[in-house]
Length: 300
Image 1 (cartoon, helix red, strand yellow):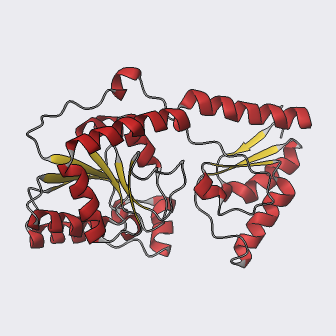
Image 2 (image 1 turned 180 degrees about the vertical axis):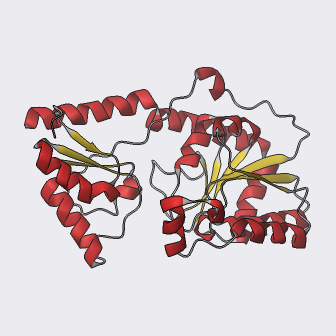
Image 3 (image 1 turned 90 degrees about the vertical axis):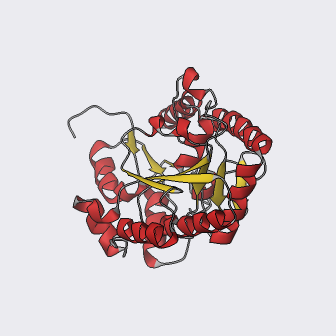
Protein backbone atom coordinates (compact mmCIF):
# COMPACT_ATOMS: atom_id res chain seq x y z
CA UNK A 1 0.00 0.00 0.00
CA UNK A 2 3.06 2.25 0.25
CA UNK A 3 3.85 1.91 -3.48
CA UNK A 4 2.83 4.77 -5.74
CA UNK A 5 0.57 3.14 -8.34
CA UNK A 6 -1.60 4.81 -10.96
CA UNK A 7 -3.52 1.73 -12.04
CA UNK A 8 -4.25 -1.82 -10.87
CA UNK A 9 -4.14 -4.51 -13.58
CA UNK A 10 -5.64 -7.82 -12.41
CA UNK A 11 -4.28 -10.53 -14.68
CA UNK A 12 -7.18 -13.00 -14.32
CA UNK A 13 -10.72 -12.83 -12.99
CA UNK A 14 -9.93 -15.58 -10.43
CA UNK A 15 -7.88 -12.96 -8.54
CA UNK A 16 -10.93 -10.76 -8.07
CA UNK A 17 -11.36 -11.16 -4.26
CA UNK A 18 -7.74 -10.17 -3.66
CA UNK A 19 -8.03 -7.42 -6.28
CA UNK A 20 -10.95 -5.82 -4.47
CA UNK A 21 -8.81 -5.58 -1.32
CA UNK A 22 -5.92 -4.18 -3.36
CA UNK A 23 -8.15 -1.55 -4.94
CA UNK A 24 -9.39 -0.51 -1.51
CA UNK A 25 -5.80 -0.11 -0.32
CA UNK A 26 -4.42 1.62 -3.42
CA UNK A 27 -7.43 3.78 -4.32
CA UNK A 28 -6.70 3.61 -8.08
CA UNK A 29 -8.67 2.51 -11.18
CA UNK A 30 -8.82 -1.28 -11.65
CA UNK A 31 -8.68 -3.25 -14.90
CA UNK A 32 -9.63 -6.94 -14.76
CA UNK A 33 -8.36 -9.33 -17.44
CA UNK A 34 -10.62 -12.30 -18.21
CA UNK A 35 -8.65 -15.05 -19.96
CA UNK A 36 -10.99 -18.00 -19.48
CA UNK A 37 -14.55 -18.89 -20.38
CA UNK A 38 -17.05 -18.11 -17.63
CA UNK A 39 -20.50 -19.55 -17.01
CA UNK A 40 -23.30 -17.76 -18.83
CA UNK A 41 -24.56 -14.64 -17.00
CA UNK A 42 -27.31 -15.44 -14.50
CA UNK A 43 -26.58 -19.19 -14.48
CA UNK A 44 -25.78 -19.49 -10.75
CA UNK A 45 -25.07 -17.65 -7.52
CA UNK A 46 -21.29 -17.53 -7.98
CA UNK A 47 -21.65 -16.27 -11.55
CA UNK A 48 -24.02 -13.54 -10.43
CA UNK A 49 -21.65 -12.63 -7.61
CA UNK A 50 -18.61 -12.37 -9.91
CA UNK A 51 -20.50 -10.19 -12.39
CA UNK A 52 -21.81 -8.03 -9.52
CA UNK A 53 -18.26 -7.56 -8.22
CA UNK A 54 -17.03 -6.67 -11.69
CA UNK A 55 -19.90 -4.23 -12.13
CA UNK A 56 -19.15 -2.53 -8.82
CA UNK A 57 -15.35 -2.55 -8.63
CA UNK A 58 -13.88 -2.93 -12.14
CA UNK A 59 -13.31 0.24 -14.11
CA UNK A 60 -12.56 -1.86 -17.20
CA UNK A 61 -13.03 -5.56 -17.98
CA UNK A 62 -10.79 -7.00 -20.71
CA UNK A 63 -11.81 -10.38 -22.17
CA UNK A 64 -9.23 -11.93 -24.48
CA UNK A 65 -11.67 -12.60 -27.32
CA UNK A 66 -15.32 -12.46 -28.36
CA UNK A 67 -15.96 -16.01 -27.13
CA UNK A 68 -14.90 -15.10 -23.59
CA UNK A 69 -16.76 -11.77 -23.81
CA UNK A 70 -20.00 -13.61 -24.61
CA UNK A 71 -19.80 -15.36 -21.22
CA UNK A 72 -19.73 -12.05 -19.31
CA UNK A 73 -22.62 -9.73 -18.47
CA UNK A 74 -23.28 -7.38 -21.39
CA UNK A 75 -23.58 -4.30 -19.18
CA UNK A 76 -19.98 -4.55 -17.93
CA UNK A 77 -17.36 -2.06 -19.25
CA UNK A 78 -15.95 -4.61 -21.73
CA UNK A 79 -13.00 -3.92 -24.03
CA UNK A 80 -11.69 -6.90 -26.00
CA UNK A 81 -7.90 -7.10 -26.31
CA UNK A 82 -6.54 -10.29 -27.83
CA UNK A 83 -3.63 -12.21 -26.41
CA UNK A 84 -0.43 -11.09 -28.08
CA UNK A 85 2.38 -13.21 -29.40
CA UNK A 86 5.77 -12.08 -30.62
CA UNK A 87 7.55 -14.25 -33.16
CA UNK A 88 10.67 -13.36 -35.07
CA UNK A 89 9.99 -12.89 -38.79
CA UNK A 90 12.28 -15.72 -39.83
CA UNK A 91 10.29 -18.23 -37.78
CA UNK A 92 7.07 -17.29 -39.56
CA UNK A 93 8.25 -18.93 -42.78
CA UNK A 94 6.15 -22.03 -43.56
CA UNK A 95 7.83 -25.32 -42.67
CA UNK A 96 9.87 -26.96 -45.44
CA UNK A 97 9.09 -30.51 -44.36
CA UNK A 98 9.87 -33.36 -46.73
CA UNK A 99 6.84 -33.93 -48.96
CA UNK A 100 7.35 -37.70 -48.68
CA UNK A 101 6.89 -37.66 -44.90
CA UNK A 102 3.45 -38.39 -43.44
CA UNK A 103 1.36 -35.31 -42.80
CA UNK A 104 1.89 -34.40 -39.14
CA UNK A 105 -0.97 -33.26 -36.91
CA UNK A 106 -0.21 -31.80 -33.50
CA UNK A 107 -2.08 -31.68 -30.20
CA UNK A 108 -0.90 -29.34 -27.41
CA UNK A 109 -2.36 -29.20 -23.93
CA UNK A 110 -2.69 -30.87 -20.55
CA UNK A 111 -3.85 -34.46 -20.95
CA UNK A 112 -7.39 -34.35 -19.59
CA UNK A 113 -10.55 -35.79 -21.19
CA UNK A 114 -12.04 -32.30 -21.58
CA UNK A 115 -9.35 -31.50 -24.17
CA UNK A 116 -10.67 -34.21 -26.49
CA UNK A 117 -7.57 -36.38 -26.36
CA UNK A 118 -9.50 -39.66 -26.41
CA UNK A 119 -11.51 -38.56 -29.45
CA UNK A 120 -8.29 -37.66 -31.26
CA UNK A 121 -6.85 -41.14 -30.66
CA UNK A 122 -10.09 -42.66 -31.95
CA UNK A 123 -9.84 -40.43 -35.02
CA UNK A 124 -6.29 -41.68 -35.64
CA UNK A 125 -7.63 -45.26 -35.48
CA UNK A 126 -10.19 -44.37 -38.15
CA UNK A 127 -7.52 -42.71 -40.32
CA UNK A 128 -5.27 -45.75 -40.05
CA UNK A 129 -8.15 -47.97 -41.21
CA UNK A 130 -8.61 -45.62 -44.19
CA UNK A 131 -4.88 -45.87 -45.01
CA UNK A 132 -4.40 -42.10 -44.71
CA UNK A 133 -0.71 -41.17 -44.59
CA UNK A 134 -0.81 -39.15 -41.37
CA UNK A 135 0.84 -39.13 -37.96
CA UNK A 136 0.04 -37.35 -34.70
CA UNK A 137 2.34 -35.85 -32.08
CA UNK A 138 0.89 -35.11 -28.64
CA UNK A 139 2.63 -32.59 -26.40
CA UNK A 140 1.35 -32.05 -22.89
CA UNK A 141 1.59 -32.89 -19.20
CA UNK A 142 -0.28 -35.78 -17.71
CA UNK A 143 -2.69 -34.30 -15.14
CA UNK A 144 -1.74 -36.97 -12.58
CA UNK A 145 1.89 -35.84 -12.67
CA UNK A 146 1.09 -32.20 -11.88
CA UNK A 147 1.59 -31.11 -8.27
CA UNK A 148 0.51 -28.24 -6.06
CA UNK A 149 -2.61 -26.10 -6.35
CA UNK A 150 -3.05 -27.00 -10.02
CA UNK A 151 -3.15 -30.71 -9.15
CA UNK A 152 -5.64 -30.06 -6.33
CA UNK A 153 -7.93 -28.16 -8.70
CA UNK A 154 -7.76 -30.89 -11.34
CA UNK A 155 -8.59 -33.56 -8.75
CA UNK A 156 -11.56 -31.54 -7.50
CA UNK A 157 -12.83 -31.22 -11.08
CA UNK A 158 -12.46 -34.96 -11.65
CA UNK A 159 -9.52 -34.62 -14.07
CA UNK A 160 -6.94 -36.58 -12.06
CA UNK A 161 -7.40 -39.80 -14.01
CA UNK A 162 -4.19 -41.23 -15.46
CA UNK A 163 -4.96 -40.13 -19.01
CA UNK A 164 -1.44 -40.85 -20.24
CA UNK A 165 -1.81 -44.52 -19.22
CA UNK A 166 -5.23 -44.68 -20.88
CA UNK A 167 -3.84 -43.17 -24.09
CA UNK A 168 -0.89 -45.58 -24.05
CA UNK A 169 -3.38 -48.43 -23.71
CA UNK A 170 -5.46 -47.16 -26.63
CA UNK A 171 -2.36 -46.84 -28.80
CA UNK A 172 -1.40 -50.45 -28.01
CA UNK A 173 -4.93 -51.79 -28.52
CA UNK A 174 -5.29 -50.04 -31.89
CA UNK A 175 -1.72 -50.68 -33.06
CA UNK A 176 -1.02 -46.95 -33.48
CA UNK A 177 2.63 -47.01 -32.43
CA UNK A 178 3.70 -45.67 -35.84
CA UNK A 179 0.85 -43.16 -36.09
CA UNK A 180 0.92 -41.52 -32.63
CA UNK A 181 3.86 -40.16 -30.60
CA UNK A 182 3.56 -38.90 -27.03
CA UNK A 183 6.14 -36.21 -26.30
CA UNK A 184 5.18 -35.34 -22.74
CA UNK A 185 5.74 -31.78 -21.55
CA UNK A 186 7.45 -29.55 -24.14
CA UNK A 187 9.17 -26.56 -22.56
CA UNK A 188 9.39 -24.46 -25.72
CA UNK A 189 6.56 -25.09 -28.16
CA UNK A 190 8.32 -22.91 -30.74
CA UNK A 191 10.51 -25.93 -31.44
CA UNK A 192 7.44 -28.06 -32.11
CA UNK A 193 5.34 -25.93 -34.46
CA UNK A 194 7.76 -26.12 -37.44
CA UNK A 195 7.33 -29.92 -37.34
CA UNK A 196 3.56 -29.70 -37.81
CA UNK A 197 1.31 -29.50 -40.85
CA UNK A 198 -2.01 -29.30 -38.97
CA UNK A 199 -3.00 -28.27 -35.44
CA UNK A 200 -5.90 -30.16 -33.85
CA UNK A 201 -7.91 -28.62 -30.99
CA UNK A 202 -10.77 -31.08 -30.26
CA UNK A 203 -11.83 -29.51 -26.96
CA UNK A 204 -15.25 -30.06 -25.39
CA UNK A 205 -15.39 -26.38 -24.37
CA UNK A 206 -16.74 -25.18 -27.75
CA UNK A 207 -13.89 -22.67 -28.04
CA UNK A 208 -10.54 -22.26 -29.75
CA UNK A 209 -7.48 -22.08 -27.50
CA UNK A 210 -4.10 -20.36 -27.64
CA UNK A 211 -2.41 -23.14 -29.69
CA UNK A 212 -4.72 -22.29 -32.61
CA UNK A 213 -3.38 -18.77 -33.10
CA UNK A 214 0.17 -19.78 -32.12
CA UNK A 215 0.13 -22.38 -34.90
CA UNK A 216 -1.35 -19.83 -37.30
CA UNK A 217 1.78 -17.68 -36.91
CA UNK A 218 3.68 -20.63 -38.37
CA UNK A 219 1.26 -20.91 -41.33
CA UNK A 220 -0.39 -24.00 -39.84
CA UNK A 221 -4.17 -24.41 -40.26
CA UNK A 222 -6.27 -25.90 -37.46
CA UNK A 223 -9.10 -28.35 -37.01
CA UNK A 224 -11.19 -27.10 -34.09
CA UNK A 225 -14.29 -28.45 -32.38
CA UNK A 226 -16.37 -25.28 -32.21
CA UNK A 227 -19.93 -24.44 -33.23
CA UNK A 228 -20.41 -21.17 -35.12
CA UNK A 229 -16.88 -19.88 -34.45
CA UNK A 230 -16.43 -16.14 -34.08
CA UNK A 231 -13.93 -14.40 -36.34
CA UNK A 232 -11.17 -14.21 -33.73
CA UNK A 233 -11.42 -17.92 -32.90
CA UNK A 234 -11.35 -19.59 -36.33
CA UNK A 235 -12.59 -18.65 -39.78
CA UNK A 236 -14.06 -21.83 -41.22
CA UNK A 237 -12.64 -22.77 -44.64
CA UNK A 238 -10.28 -19.77 -44.39
CA UNK A 239 -7.88 -20.35 -41.48
CA UNK A 240 -8.87 -23.93 -40.76
CA UNK A 241 -11.82 -26.28 -40.46
CA UNK A 242 -14.49 -26.16 -37.75
CA UNK A 243 -16.45 -29.22 -36.70
CA UNK A 244 -19.55 -28.91 -34.49
CA UNK A 245 -18.36 -31.28 -31.74
CA UNK A 246 -15.30 -33.42 -30.88
CA UNK A 247 -16.62 -36.52 -32.59
CA UNK A 248 -13.93 -38.99 -33.78
CA UNK A 249 -15.53 -39.48 -37.21
CA UNK A 250 -15.85 -35.72 -37.77
CA UNK A 251 -12.24 -35.21 -36.64
CA UNK A 252 -11.07 -37.96 -38.97
CA UNK A 253 -12.96 -36.49 -41.94
CA UNK A 254 -11.52 -33.00 -41.39
CA UNK A 255 -7.97 -34.25 -40.81
CA UNK A 256 -8.16 -36.51 -43.87
CA UNK A 257 -9.33 -33.64 -46.03
CA UNK A 258 -6.39 -31.47 -45.03
CA UNK A 259 -3.93 -34.35 -45.17
CA UNK A 260 -4.87 -35.32 -48.71
CA UNK A 261 -5.37 -31.85 -50.18
CA UNK A 262 -1.92 -30.24 -50.11
CA UNK A 263 -3.07 -27.09 -51.91
CA UNK A 264 -5.96 -26.50 -49.52
CA UNK A 265 -3.69 -27.05 -46.53
CA UNK A 266 -1.11 -24.54 -47.77
CA UNK A 267 -3.80 -22.00 -48.68
CA UNK A 268 -5.47 -22.22 -45.27
CA UNK A 269 -2.06 -22.02 -43.60
CA UNK A 270 -1.11 -18.88 -45.52
CA UNK A 271 -4.46 -17.27 -44.68
CA UNK A 272 -4.13 -18.35 -41.04
CA UNK A 273 -0.81 -16.56 -40.76
CA UNK A 274 -2.30 -13.34 -42.15
CA UNK A 275 -5.26 -13.66 -39.75
CA UNK A 276 -2.93 -14.21 -36.78
CA UNK A 277 -0.80 -11.20 -37.63
CA UNK A 278 -3.90 -9.02 -37.94
CA UNK A 279 -5.44 -10.18 -34.65
CA UNK A 280 -2.68 -11.39 -32.31
CA UNK A 281 0.54 -9.50 -33.06
CA UNK A 282 2.07 -8.46 -29.73
CA UNK A 283 2.88 -4.94 -30.92
CA UNK A 284 -0.72 -4.19 -31.91
CA UNK A 285 -2.31 -5.63 -28.79
CA UNK A 286 0.23 -4.05 -26.45
CA UNK A 287 -0.73 -0.69 -27.95
CA UNK A 288 -4.42 -1.46 -27.46
CA UNK A 289 -3.80 -2.32 -23.81
CA UNK A 290 -1.77 0.84 -23.32
CA UNK A 291 -4.64 2.85 -24.79
CA UNK A 292 -6.99 1.26 -22.23
CA UNK A 293 -4.59 2.32 -19.47
CA UNK A 294 -4.57 5.90 -20.73
CA UNK A 295 -8.36 6.09 -20.96
CA UNK A 296 -8.70 4.87 -17.37
CA UNK A 297 -6.10 7.32 -16.09
CA UNK A 298 -7.53 10.33 -17.91
CA UNK A 299 -11.04 9.41 -16.84
CA UNK A 300 -9.95 9.28 -13.21
